Length: 249
Ligand code: ATP
Image (cartoon, rainbow, N blue to C red; front, side):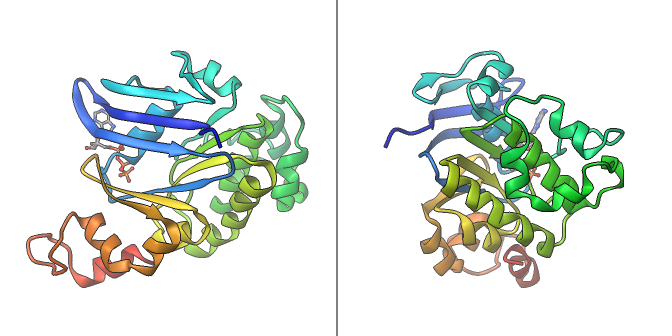
């Protein structure tokens, strides 16, 4: 099946300093790819590059078989939608206003996947819980009929239980509508529980990649990739056992 997104040999960063180096990433329709790694590993930079928000120093990005357009909104119109970690919702507007702001196809698919929003349509976004705001951010992206969704840190500020409530909707989106999803997520186990494949970045490079089920079954390998160590001990990594365990919570 033709990939909906392809990053080949990508080096990207800021002011000439690479934050991601030599990255290879592909995404098939209906596939969920979890993009994991510690703070500063290059996950957001990868998503921004994939969305066309920053231009790579080296390498090529293609979406739906074509090179990315230099203008972000042109890529969005083609179906490549970024849900930023800042959530991109307007606090002074109601849920309904947020959803219909960039209306193209109506709110049907968004409400089908997030039925809890129906009862909140008249509420100002600033009064929603963190989990409801995140739900709205993704629902808002769905109104644009994405073919690829790039979701940055869905769990930012959310309890694992709130993240857990959102994840089945992401899986349904991929399964029912064939939307390809790149999911940046700090809760590794939760992300791997719905993903098909995963990439662990460390210092801007791919430290580990494979089927999500394989990574989930080998926590040791993931933890090592996450912290950039092969020894299996904490020596020299500056990370203690509690920190390592936290990664999986
Ligand atoms: P986090 O989980 O903390 O969000 P991340 O994996 O998403 O981290 P990036 O945000 O992609 O990582 O950052 C990768 C590197 O690029 C870091 O060293 C970061 O300090 C640097 N960086 C990010 N944004 C900028 C910027 N606007 N200007 C300069 N450097 C930046």
